[in-house]
Amino acid sequence: MATAILPAKKVVMFTTPTCSHCTTAKRYLREKGVKFKEIDVSRNQKAAQDMLSKTGQQGVPQLWINNRPVVGFDRNKINSLLGL
Image (cartoon, rainbow, N blue to C red):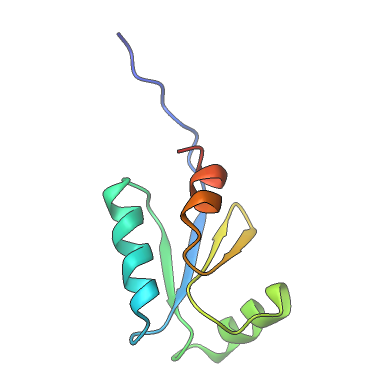
């Protein structure tokens, strides 16, 4: 039986080093085998501004999955956007 190959999703995660929900989100994506680009907004002010202008939110984690934002670790929304 062949396994279906899901199309790759572009995932960008905005985080800070002290955010426990960020750690949880990163662990979850790694467990699911999802590749993502991590951006530390405490070190990248332009990214922090981009994040704020897109969502109106400063909180992290923020995941952009195929350019659709998820603010916070919302497992159901993440799963839905990733097709998990």
